[in-house]
Length: 239
Image (cartoon, rainbow, N blue to C red):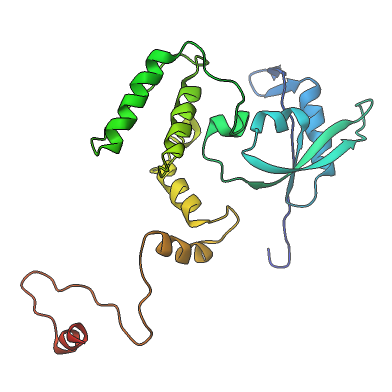
């Protein structure tokens, strides 16, 4: 309605809850979530600014560095003795790798017992440097060190002054066409998540290599098959 503005306050907490039917009859059916987590989320929502998202410390650890967050310290919340540490979600970051977001970009530990796969990857990288490129797929069960292998080869490529292009695929974006490519283009163009479509057009054009034409020159489409360009277009081309 005119003159009325709506605002949201969101609170998010992570943890274990009990989920089940509260009332299950022919006419009425309700479901409940029991535990301290939903209560904490409700208390956090009450402290959030308008159109703001406040998250619990457990949620902050879960999101890693995917979001930029501001520490709100320990909040005095009803029903939680000693208070709870909370964070204000500020913006989404431009980190593309899940590994980097959760563990950081560096590691002081060297890989142990991975000589064979590292040798295969090093050989593939050497072939790529000789313009005999290809694709390498690292597969295996979760937690066996696939990302660590990839990061190790990445560091070796960086020492060779290679240009690295990194994209990340996740199940939550599988229904968004070309999502990893769009994220890569936005990152290369320096587009922030809060930028509007109008603010994003020019950086994308520059990144894609499109040069701005001089003022006073019209952009003309190439003639179709069997069609001759008009005289004005011929004069522009000859100039």
